[in-house]
Length: 132
Image 1 (cartoon, rainbow, N blue to C red):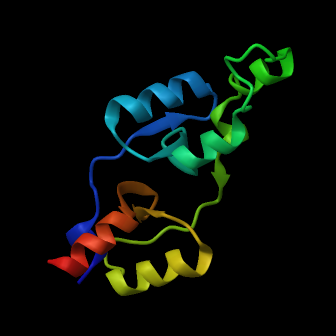
Image 2: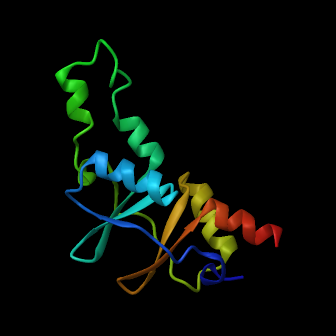
């Protein structure tokens, strides 16, 4: 089975300078766990919901919040993203994609046809393909 048969073709992209509040809003509204970061339409990185959790200060919205804590919430995407993400093409086998994800301890692979983003393959897509 090929990645193209099970990938999620609806992807959400954000710009390099989009700020964390925008990213959080998109993730919550769209129900996704990953955002693809683009510059002039070309993939530059990936941001997961876990990346945002690691970036944000645990003291936000508490009595001991400092200016530095507040500043973490305004970082742009390019400061949070994983750069040069591992990608696959649509004809990559699901088995190979899952193997890459396990080897690199990642939960998604952008799917590119040349330089064009055509989808995203997540661990959920892989599990779903194995169950079917």
